[in-house]
Structures are given as C-alpha cells and as structure tokens.
Image (cartoon, rainbow, N blue to C red):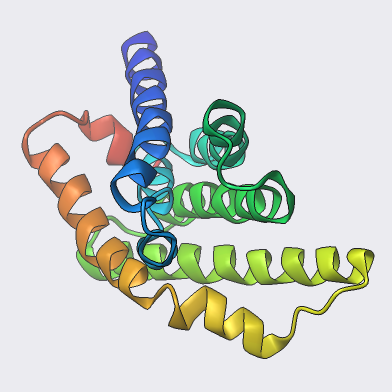
Length: 182
C-alpha cells in the first residue's frame, strides 16, 4: 500500500512537471499552443494513472503554478478557468476509470466523458466570469474555443492517452492494483 502511494505521488509530480514543460514546445506560437492543449495531456494521464484526488490536484494547481513560474497563462480569466477545467478533467478521468470496466471501449468512453464534462464546466466557468465582468461569452464562442479551435488537441488526447496508459501497463511501470476496479 505504501509503495503504491509513493508511486502515485511520483507520477503526480511527473505529470505536474509535464504541465510546466509541455507548453514550451507549443507556446512559442499562441495559436498552435491553444490548438494542442499541452497541459490537458498530463492532467488526464494523472487522472487515469493515480485517480481522482491526484488528477484534480494536478489540474487545479498546474495553471496557477505555471503562471507563478512563467507568467503564462494569464491569471484571469485564462488560468482561473483553465484550473477549473483541468481539475474536472483529472477528477472525472479518475472517477469514470474507477467506475467503468477496464476494457478498451470503456477506456475511450471514460476519456471522452471526462473531456466533455471538463469542457462543459470550462464553458460554464467562462460564462459566469463574463457575467461578473459584464462582458460577453456566447455559446458560439464556447463552441469555437472548446471544440473547433481545440479539435487537433482533442484528437491527440484521444490517440495518445490510451497508448500511454496501456504502454505503461504493458511495460509493468504501473502496478495492476493501480488499474484494478476496487
């Protein structure tokens, strides 16, 4: 049990570190960085590998830590809304993965549901922020930002997350107890 906790903490720290580093690969060109959603990958991965509380933690902390260290993303509204979205990604990836059978179709269902819930919560957060700021955040703006502009990043997440999780499992870098339904 203690070995699993230590391993989960290490994977959580690795995922948080990836949230800090991956945007450097895409962030030089803002449009590409927004399209690829580089911080989403490690948060989803953490949710799958370590579970709900760890995924929620990485998702909630990563945008604020990245702002504190590097000044990006802008604290408000970007980092604040992103923290809520990513926290939902990590939490729901862990929750649905725990609830559903450990078979490939359910893995994809878990991934897509976590992404939809996270993006929906992000849209709701941005709408509330816009209401408080007396600015506009329309449904069209939500669809464009959450799905159209991020479509390439969504595709990458749907391809890479299962490959990474199942490769780590096959290489025995993840104890089976991590992935077993409890």
